[in-house]
Image (cartoon, one colour):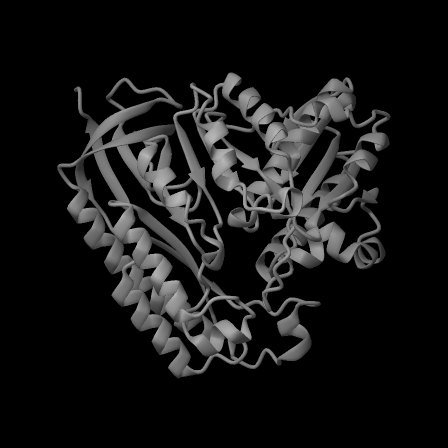
Length: 433
């Protein structure tokens, strides 16, 4: 019955995916048929879980809402609800400007969403989820919010202060995920290295990882969003000693100029950043370090940018992404600086760095040819199976393409010999073929 069917559309980051998966489960237990990112005609009720982090994400969320408003006006759906970060940040304006939406919910109004459908939030089922495809990897959100006040970041305004989830609760959820077929567990937080400080008065990430390592059917554990100045000394030996932990560190440095790091309200200097990065390289052989950078932040001179550009060339990050600065209402940068760097300069700087990264990636990939890597198979697409090494995270990093003439299955981890390389892709075949 389409009347009892609800389609949840998820936009934004992995943390939003987790929220949607938990809502899907609670709605199903309440007697509803649930869908995720389904076709327009698949359900008469739609919930959009939005992102409101930066301008591009806000624009995507608003365009998605307006698209479903048209669907409602044309009779394809009956009810439209909006939740998540955009709704939290701009609820009053959205209510005024898009009255066709039946109701808006903020990030902390999960129970209210369920009550709208005459069902109650079941606390005893708070660790249960309906996994969205492909299902062999899953994100584990270890905390909510952030205590840091980086000048450019709107997350504390939207999600509030850092709140760690108890170790026991996270282990229960991870066991459920593993029992559902999850092979790769990806730990996410706005600042993963800060985990536990609010709840246990000490950093507890290594303790949490040690508990997760006991779940036998988990094959890979991946760590996302470690803050540079909070990297734990206990984390390095743990990664070296446990092959289940992917040799992959996501460490967003944002900039390297001391002047810009101070303006951005980051709590680390260039010297401290370099010390951490080179220590990781030295002590974890073969580690892939991923970072993100921001170009065009207020105060960034051409000299600051050239310093960042040179460092990108010198350090040679294995994985890298660049964001153009987005002037976000309510942030420290918004309140204290003018957004006076033209967009074409922001774009030029970001593009130049990505061209540098393209060359770095091509060189790294060329060295991978004839080597064997463990690859998790994510999906079949066209004439290829698409997989990833332990050095690559879903959606954001490069992939390994394997011709579909081989007998492979989604969710399996297979030894693949690399036969060819491209700037941001590898090609291979099973070792035993």
